[in-house]
Length: 323
Image 1 (cartoon, one colour):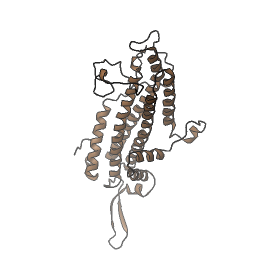
Image 2: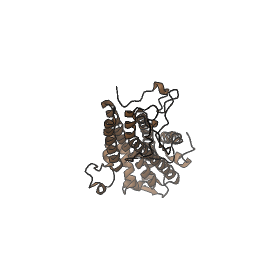
Image 3: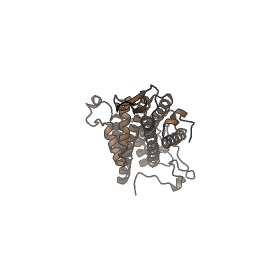
Image 4: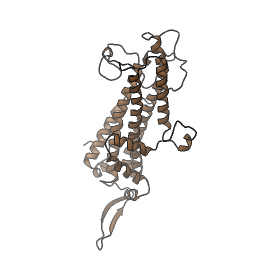
């Protein structure tokens, strides 16, 4: 068992398998974050005046140039959605750890619940965008008109995702962007993942945050029978850490959510890199060396492909058609 992340008091009250799982997942996420930048640029519906059009960039045909110009900004917006979700996950993870160390279980339950919601929402939303790109590839993107259709479709989906769980009054004048309740996304995710049992874990976290029996039990450390009767008696403590209840639920939910998010982060990043290379966005020339997270340099055919396949570029095909 590793004790360098969670404190000794937490280990004493958290089930050993839950604590170990949480430690391992946090370590994996720390390793993952070592390659994530702290800032980046992103663009959407931005007129690409910085793109040099005086001549065709080497390696691009006129048609490929037009496709790249249509997709580069929406691609950067998809990458920014991925990056902001990664940053949010990192902050929530930190909140869970601090809360457990400080025995602030209500705060820990709130952060763990937010991680669980993020995991379910990102699973549904990222797959929606991935499927849209796959569909476009099946239909084929051969010219600027095809790229425009994909651009509009991806932009609409991305904006709907960005606004989808906002307050309903913000969207009341936007017929194309209806509010999506987070519970709907959770139910869809757990059904798709065939993991209906996790809804009980989520409900325990909700009960811990809201006034209820579970939030009451966050401050109890012992439960037993009264010596002279059948009544139950609790011993109360402001700094309680209770095994097999809130502490374990926080640890279990955090570990599952972060593991789910890590898988989906890597999967979505691969899709973003594939779109980047398939649309030949790296071949565009930006006057001010504009760059953003998810944009690679034009790869050398003898170097490893930036998509992470492990193959050299000459053997790793990226295309906007399935043919």
